Length: 163
Image (cartoon, rainbow, N blue to C red; front, side, top):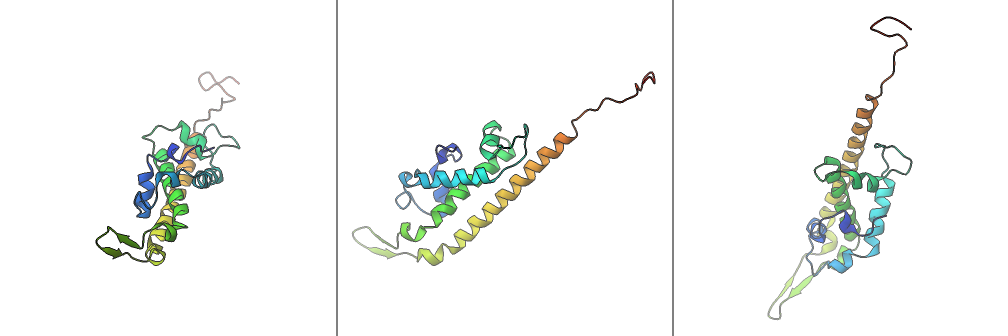
């Protein structure tokens, strides 16, 4: 189980960057909520792959824990984590993003988050889809590579010809 999204994401700033929100609009305390941890858990548990050693309960969490940081699959799983949390954050972006900013002397009315964030939401969904596709491809490559490592002893000794 994911204990904290920071187990898979270097910092909350990565999620904020994807969403286009600042620290005041999306504080660390909000990103630490169980809601995002659970969303990540469900995503990891729902993305099952066959990877050595193949077991029925193999999932992205157990795979991620074994990978070196330079491994391509490790980096793709991190991307999946970032975009999964960002997707959940964007569900309520209209409540988070400031519409009017004031500094005491002047006011600036910002864009309407509901309409302006549609392109951000679409980009996040596309990146999620790409990450899932990459993970599936990388897991399939690992499975195919292992199939060729099996050795079968021949029935006939090829050197002497005895059975």
